[in-house]
Length: 186
Image (tube, rainbow, N blue to C red; front, side, top):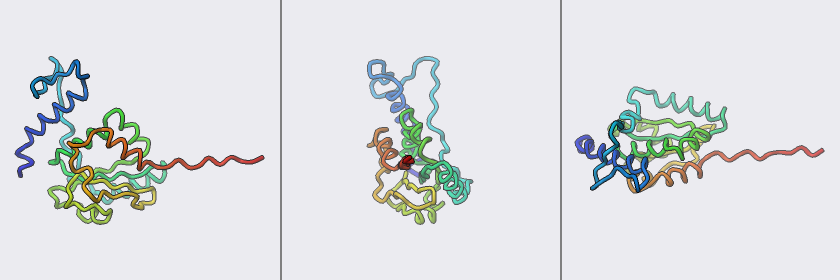
């Protein structure tokens, strides 16, 4: 596939993005559009396998719903594929310092593999995700498994046009509301 042939280009782009994030502009290692890391620094691209092709996604979602109910969180379903550069970028934004604590405090994340658009298509349909719009695609469930949000318009399909702040805004918008504090009147 074309996306696999372009992996070297994608890896270079991620290196440039990560280098730009990791260093202030005045100390940026990016020169002439090519990232060069300081001597002795090792760079590792985002995890190559975000989405397990052997996982039982239905069971993972079931367990996530139980955990979310117990911990008063929401379930965040991330439909995507390991071949998808936008999926890797979304994963990077999920785990950047500004979003990681927000994600951990409010969500149980389930990465659902769509393979080469040949896996878990029934789950995408069940949760209202039109895969024809592309991946990554997100759905938010409450602790009872009720759909609170399903991405219908490919909002995150072009992650290269978005930034970490867009992910922060999404996580803030769909996080669970705190239960009202009931004070006893004595």
